[in-house]
Length: 242
Image (cartoon, rainbow, N blue to C red; front, side, top):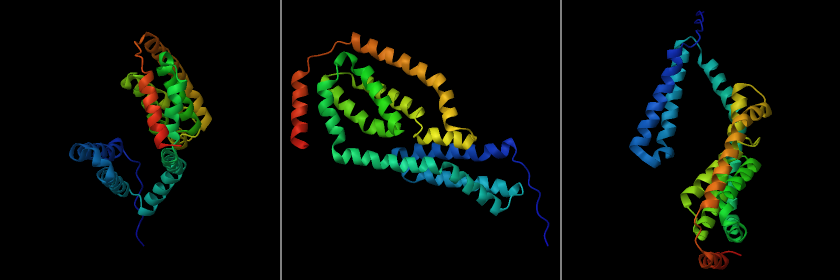
């Protein structure tokens, strides 16, 4: 009967080795493959780093059964976030295929005031992201619609994009439906709403400052007369969608 190897707690260098290797491999993947790095190379980098972490665990006296239990425990903690991500993908596809985004563009051209457009875009994206718990879905659906409205009104596309991202990430951070907001307290072992409560100390002041800045920019902007362009865009959307 063989004597079991004594389990040793991982040192700082042991913990840093897989992280450094992962960062190096991910950097090399993006450098070599560019935008295509997310279609396979990044996943290979993650698997290699995981394998190295497993080897370090075995070196420190842990059996494969122990490592396997740790993997299962980690996946179980993040499963809620994974399921939310699956729902997010479904929601984006549904909104795109059903004509929700073109509808938002069509009526947004009529309803949004140009002088308040940037602040309104930020606020709308914040509310939508908080409701559905996803900054990506908001940017890919409502954000796309607001970009269309900005083009129709002759507004700055860069400032509009900034307003969309600002609102989307604010709403995502404080939403109890967000996968990252659920994942952080699950990993740390704390309560979800306590986590959101402490985030409010930084997110609320930042969004108030952001809205004020976008209001000042909008009120001071030289807004061109784009009524003919708006009517043209609405006519095109009316021909393509019911």
